[in-house]
Every structure is written in structure tokens, then in C-alpha cells.
Image (cartoon, rainbow, N blue to C red; front, side, top):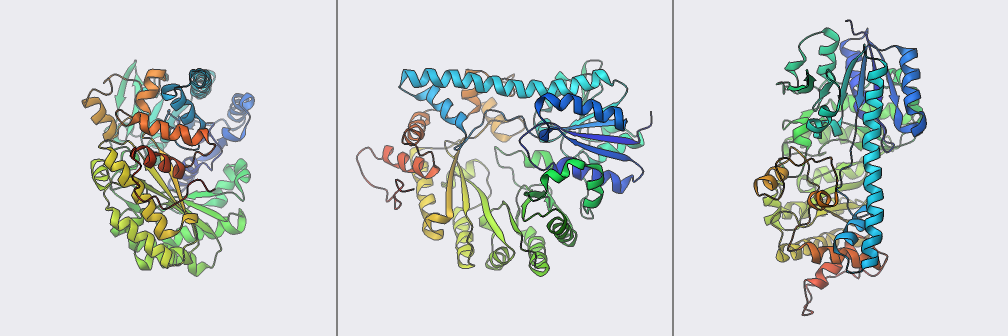
Amino acid sequence: MSNNSILYIWLPCKKIYPIGPTYLANYVHRKRSHIQQHILDLSVINKGGRLNAITDMLDKFKPDIIAFSWRDIQIYAPHGGDDSLELAFNFYYSSNIFKKLQAGIKGLSMVFTYENHLKEKLYLIKKTIKNYPDKTYVIGGGAFSVFHNEIIKKLPDGVVGVIGEGEDVLVSLIDGTDIEAHRVVYKKAGRVITGKGKQPVPIADISMDYPYIETIFPQVSSYFGETIGIQTKRGCPYNCEFCLYSFIEGPNVRYRDPEKIIDEIRYLYSRWNVRKIWFADAQFIPGSQAVRHCKALLEGIIKSKLPVEWSGYVRTSLITPELADLMVLSGVGDLEVSITSGSQSVLNEMSMGFRLEHLYEGCRYLKKAGYRGKVILNYSINAPGETEETLIESINSYKAIVKIMGREQVQCVIFFLGVQPHTGLEKRLIESGYLNNSYNPISLSPFSIKKLLYNPAPLDRVIAQSCLDAWKEGEGSGEKIMYNLEKRLNPGGKSYGFVIDCKKT
């Protein structure tokens, strides 16, 4: 069967520019320009109209290949700012029976909503396959890559599941070559078959043809004026115990041509009214070897004189004085920093690959360069290796960064590690007996939620109570939780020098 046309279906999720399908379509257009393509974004269509939208598009476009992109499943791994965390902690740790009961009822409703979202996506896929059985079906995206073992078993035989990058898989399907040479998984006669390929996609010469994307993605106009994600590189050299980037994109960092990226930003600015860019990399500065690439990109933005604001995940431990100057001059906005812990021993335990003193040093360089954005510190407290002493070290690390940057420029966010497949954390928890080897990561129950929302004894209650007290007072900020933690860890009243009055808003 010839495959001369592709329909990409962005499965419903929170509205966010669909980087995956647009990059795939752009790649296919460059490699096989005769292929007709179309992108359908279900996230901007009401739930009741999604199946009809698929049917109408299939009847009109008549694609040979249908590629579903599944961005997220949202396993129960909430953090500060998400109501589900408060519900979970009230249910598991509150001493107030009424709050516990209320949280249980609302929590069941949230689990029901989660299950419905999961079922809806599977329903849309299965119904499409049933109504149009003569098509070639592909499924990929971040959610599928992470949970492919669980999802593929729920799909009919023959659906090609893509783990990680999908560009070369689509080209193989177009050409009719062996897909098992790629990172794929599919069922045949009920048996799951996994491909052997792990060759990364070369991206050095990739240039996004946004005028072409406009012709195949009419809904793109709904993203004009919003934040648009751009990949400047792929891959992550680190093996952080809880992270999936190296699993999905591979450990080798591959870079795109900075000049091509500048051209794209220029087009997005002038034609799409885009003023904010999110560099959708695992880390914007993944290592010292990336500094040259980052400098070239930032120098290009400065030279272009485009008044855009950019942001992304950044390891401040890798920022040099020169890089800090370029970041500020090029329009850097708020920066997401996964500090995880303010204890070097916990950072080492989680294989984070940086030294705290270097993180502080990078903050000093930013401040000296005149940085005016916020450093958003993501702390994953009660990670493996956590003790009362390491919690105090985290509190002190937060205070140290506040002292460097100023309180107004630091935002503390408390996370709890979510246990996910294919991570070092999952492996160690199975080996230790914390998780059963046959556990299902997408099946939720009160028991599994408490396991997957990693907050183990003996620190679970003191941490949970610090969070509950903050929410009770109407302030769920990470700063307030840190303040409460320090008070609880000092029952005798000895001060560890919390220099910030967290009661002020």
C-alpha cells in the first residue's frame, strides 16, 4: 500500500503549541516533498466535537497515514500550585476527619477525571481505527514514549508506536522500509514486538518552514501572539534519577544551526506576533561544550535587535560571566532551575551532576549582569537520601540564593518526585521492594497514588504538615512551606537564621 499523505492528530491536552507534529511535518516535507500533510489540533476543539472533527478531516483529506501525538498522561505527581497535592495530603495526613473525608471525595472525583481523560484519548484512537481500518496508524509523543509498555497493549494490532523521535520512522513508513530498525513497538497476533534502533535523528540542518506549516495547519492562527516553543538542541548528557529526557531524546546532545533558529524567531516575531519564546530543550546549557552554541544563538538574537523574551530550563551552575551578559542583553525572562535539593549529598544521590557552589556562582553572574527576571527554584523534597539535616541544608540553600538575587527575584516551588517508568528512581524503588515489579504506572488507586507521589517515611508527616499549615493559612508558596519546615525541625526554638519574613506577601 502506498503512503503518500499523512494526517497528524494532536490529542487533547492543555492548550500548548504542538511542537512535535510541526517538527515531524517539517522534516517529512524536507525529505519527501511530494507527501501531502495536514495537522489537526484537538486541544482547541470542544470535547463533544472532537470525533466529528477527525471524521470530517479523514473524509475530506483521505490520508494514507494517521499519526496520533499524545503529549501527556498526567500521572499523579502534583506539586505546589496544583490542588491535587493539597487533596492528597489532607487525605493521607490530616488529623481533621472532616477534611480527610472531604479530600477523599474530591480526590475520587479527580481520579475519575484522570481516568476519563485517558479513556477519551484511547476511544478517539480506537474509534478512528474501527471506522477507517485501511489506514496505516502511528502513535507517538511524550506520553506514549514514557508509557508505551502500558498503552500499546490497549491498542489494536498493527498500530506503530514510536518511542522518542519519530522523524525517521515516518520516512520508513513512506518508503516501505523496515521499521524495526527504529525505536518502535507494536503488536502482531497479540504479541508485542519492539524495534532495535536507537540511531538519533540528525538535526544540525533542520530549518522550520513556518510558511509551509501555515498551509497544512489552519488552526495555527490560534497560537499567534502566544509563547512558541523552539528546540535549539536535542538530547541530555545527564542521568538524573527521576528524569526522562535522556531516555526519550538520548544522551548525546545534537545542535541546530543558530542562524536558522534566528531566522525562525524573526519570522515568528513579524508574522505570528510572537514576543515570547520557550527554548524547549532538556537544558538550554546542557554542559560546558554547549556554551559556544548558546553564545552564538544569543549573540544572533542581540544582533537581530528583536525585542523578544526567551526562557527555558537552565542550569545556573554552567553560566559564565560572559554568558550571563549575553543572556541579559538578548532578553532572557524567568528561568526554571531544577535545583532538586540544597544538599550536595542528595544531589549526588540523585546523579544531578552539578555542585551547589557553582549554582550560586551562576546566580551571582546573572545578578551582576543586571538580570531582572525570576529564578524559579524547583525543590523535590524528600528525595532518596533525604534527612532532617539535608532538609535544613535545602532551606539554607534557598536563603543563600535569595541573599544573592533578592527576594523579589526568587520563587520557590516545592515538588514531590513522581515515579515514572524507565527512570533510575523507578528501578531503585523496585529493587528495594518499595514498588512491586508488576505495578501499573497508569492505574490509580489510593494505595498507588501514595506510592507514586514519592514522600516516604520517616519525613513524610513533618513535610506534609508543613504543607498543610501553609495551605490552612491561605499561603501555599514554597517559601512558606520552607519556613514551616524550619520551625518544625527546630522544636527547641533554635533559629537556623531564616532571614526572610515569610508572612509578608
